[in-house]
Image 1 (cartoon, rainbow, N blue to C red):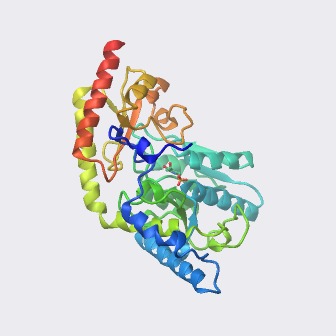
Image 2: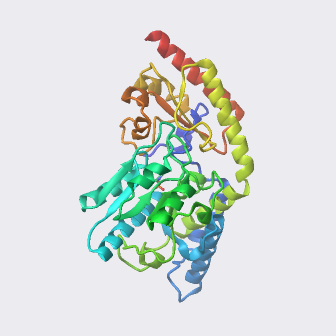
Image 3: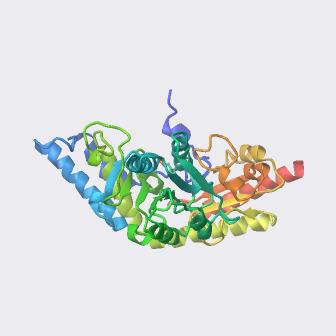
Length: 393
Ligand SMILES: Cc1ncc(COP(=O)(O)O)c(C=O)c1O
């Protein structure tokens, strides 16, 4: 039996500091989706009656709203189930299409510190005969563009570099990466799931050919995202069916989720600057409060080129499993990505942290609802747990 929401959300629920795993759906998003579940239940592909035409018009409006937030054209947007699917379509679909044109699989470049939703499709392509180079980040988590320049060869087809890292929050120098790719005639894909709605950018400014988005990282519904795809790029579909989304993502469109995604994107745009300032101030206070309690604390990732809502720290000298067990009832946070399969973070190890240090790390990510009180309580709880673990050891 499923637990009731009341049982999960008890008054003593832990302080929610895991907003990079996912975010709660905003109440305005829930309201916007409401009529599209049962009142307006048409299939947007049904063009012969009003129900279908109404759904199609709503989807088109949502498509325009989201693409407007990114300054791209509505035709460039392909709805998917999330960023994982968008990454798979871009990486597998484009690499295979180019390989078919050239008669052989080529070379693909990405980073060791990417999300599994990029690394795993690349592994699949490696099994299919593509050559993969994974660049290591610098100790601050950033890519040195010179390393990318040196790695590109005659047969390099595609580069994939995320805009903001899901674990350490660092923001990669995408415009520089894009300039290199443009000069060398290489396609650039960027997973912007963690950045969209949290930092200002537009698709032209970034200069990438493909962007992957996910709604649930910005207070939208789970199960919907998009791939932004520059015109003229060849992409082979991964599945076949009714031809929706230019044949790249066939299947009936989930109208309520699409409406919710557009609402979330609009909300994120409307208060981006003020929310960013507020959350950054809280994040900095969290860092100061923890650092005061434990001067030996290590910050993971660049100090300033990072998302406003991310803090990732290593607490050297304590056991990771004991730390997470002791904090579980008080602070909802993580040691790495929600998709990390229980392994120590490959991102932290790429920065040079040991296995033990990676395990004794906390990713603390703030959200719209995080308050000053939450931060005070989190500082107190974490400092107390660390003190206890150090003195028991
Ligand atoms: C950078 C990044 N890419 C992809 C994903 C997967 O996104 P989705 O859950 O929409 O498939 C996530 C979410 O964890 C992420 O942080």
